[in-house]
Structure formats: structure tokens, C-alpha cells
Image (cartoon, rainbow, N blue to C red):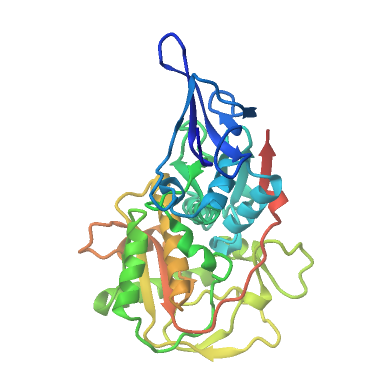
Length: 410
């Protein structure tokens, strides 16, 4: 009897021949794969040392001629072992730190995670500390930010060689439970978003001018395909449609200047140098970027009309590259999918050398959001407007520490 990490040990009933107990082999004690084995039993999730008897046999999982295993996505036995064993607290915290590198409106970070050791399940919950009651009363932007964090978690888990099953809104009676993610085993090659992982910590929102330079069609196609993987549409408006989008954003910016509620949400999540509040959330002064002197690129002024001493001005692009992320419906699940697609697009763009920022002003006014859409598209609901281009990378903004957004349960 020889086995590999990740194979299944099946113990049969001596009378019926049916499976009496089964478990996953998570550890070997001999290099040649002979017993004994460390087995995680499916009925108890406990790991025990097993010397298989005559009523036991091994079910090999995808054993190829070169000794590579299909179930690990050809990652080798070390990755298979990592995927089989339980996560340590330090590993859980590292995964959540990757998840929280995601963007959110005003960097409000509206998420909270819980990890259940016994079942190897992550829960993602909405954290209303990060809600914007005036700007986002329906919590649409909150769901999009949490969807982006969920995408980062999926990517980080895949980077560790683990496969996971994700369910959106798994409990209808608990709408603040946005998603569950169950770690199921070694990662399969057919479901591997790990290639995006190098951009998880390097992607930052850029509030600087971009070059007047075209984005190649190959790059645009890659971004469109990234969104489609989450069943979301990505379109690049041009001509009259681009001008319409720019006009709607300009109208929203004019409304924001005189709207006290919008100003209150902005003030809550922005900090100038003399602000004494804790610095683990929001947009600090060093990330405001320069004030726009000329150009048509839509930019939110995070100073909110306040004077920031020494803040420079700059000429922004006259022909900005905008992209619209849209869904066919407009329900919480669609918002979560839009967030996952958003993060896929942002990470793909980062790997392709693009800088990115968000243009959400028109989305925050109900009557301005509807006409943003492309009337020729089947995707009726615009969930996000992105600005993309070649320019200075964004500045890292603070994040809450992992222990502030994570609970670990037995």
C-alpha cells in the first residue's frame, strides 16, 4: 500500500463492502508512501495516526506518470500538504491582511471576517462602522467593497495552493453575512486565480495625472475578460457616450459642493495633517493627490473645500480613459459580484502597468446613475466607473490591523 498526501483512505465494512469511514491523508511517515499515515477523518475532522488493515484501501487523486497530482494543480507535494492541514492563526491573519488590501469607498473598510477552525470556513460580514449613511444609503458601495475583499481572499487562498468553495449571501435571514468560503482541498488547475496575487499589495488608487496615451486593445480585452469571469460587463465609453458620462460626473460634483450630507460622509473618512483621530481608515492628506488645474479627467477632491497648505496643482488628461462595470440586475448579490469583478480588473490592470482610480460621484445620485449606462448594452446597471491610464502609481492608504477585523473560532 502506497499513498500520497491528499489521497483518500477508505475503510470498508467487512460484511457489506460499503465504505464505513473515509478520510484524507494529510501526512506521510515514509518517503515511499507506505503506512502509517496521518488521516483527517471526514466524520470528525480529527487527525489520527493510522496503520491501515486489510479492510482499507487507498483512493488515489489524479496520479500522473510524472508523479504530478491533478488535485494540486501540478504544485507538488509540499503545496498539497499545506492545503490539507489546518490553518494556523498566523496564516489566517495573513490571508485576511491580503483580503483587506482591497479598495472601498473612502477607504471605509466595511468588512469583518470570522474563521471557523473545525469546518475550515471563512465568513465575510458587513461592518457598519464602514458605512456611509448619506452617500450610500442602500449599502451598494459597501457590498462592492466587501466583494473586492472577498476576491482578494480567494486569490490569497489560491496562492497558498488551496481550493475553496464560495457562497454569496448564504443565509437569507442574515443579510449582513455576505459570503462564506470553505477550504476544500488542493487547488485544481482549472480554478487558479493565484496569478493575480503579486498585485494584491501593490495595487493602490492613483489620484495623479495620467499620460495622454492609448491603452492597447490587448490590454482592454484582458480587462474585459477579467470582469466577465465574475459575470460582470466592462465597457469603455467613447464619443457621445463618454461625453455624457463626463457631463453626469460634472453635474454630481457640482451637487456635492453644496450638499451637507455628502460633506459629512467625506469629512468622516478624510484626515488632514492636524487631525488627531486614529489613522487606520479613511483617506489621509498625503493620499489626496494634487488639485486639478486643467484637464477633463474627473477627480474627487478629498480635501472637501478645505485648504491644505503646500498641496500642489497639476494638469490632468484632456481625454481620460474611463470604464464602466455593469450588471444585468441590481441586487445585493450583483453588488458583491461587481466588487469581485472590480478587484479582478484592478489587479489585472496593475500587472499590465496601468494606474487606476475611481469615479463614483454620479453613482451616488440616484437620478444620475441610470443615464450612465450604454443604451446599446444588455447590462442596465452601472456599478462602478473607473479611470485608467499610464501614470504615477497610487499611494498606499492605511488599513485596520487584522485583529480588529477578524475573529477566530474553534
